[in-house]
Length: 119
Image (cartoon, rainbow, N blue to C red; front, top):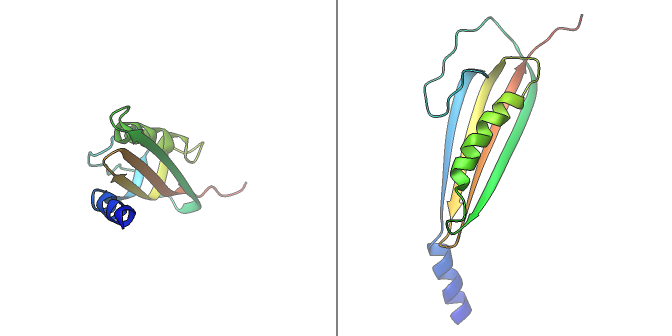
């Protein structure tokens, strides 16, 4: 009974948050997180679908997992769709969960590379 009470207490002390952002287009070299982004771009069609994600953990205050995943987002954007300066129909999902001892921050980038016709 004592273990069950302890587990219920730990579950009550945990929290989880999810945040979604969508972008019609992202210009890779101009993207700044948490700022409006609506680049002027040429007419492009979506091609290949790409999903990338990154997660970081943190025990107590040993590191800032949220800050690390925010920085990883910029890298994910830069390395998506090599050879193109745009990502199309992008969706960024941020998820954080925390307990008293441990926190985890994840970021997921879903986007389409611009279609490149074969020559």
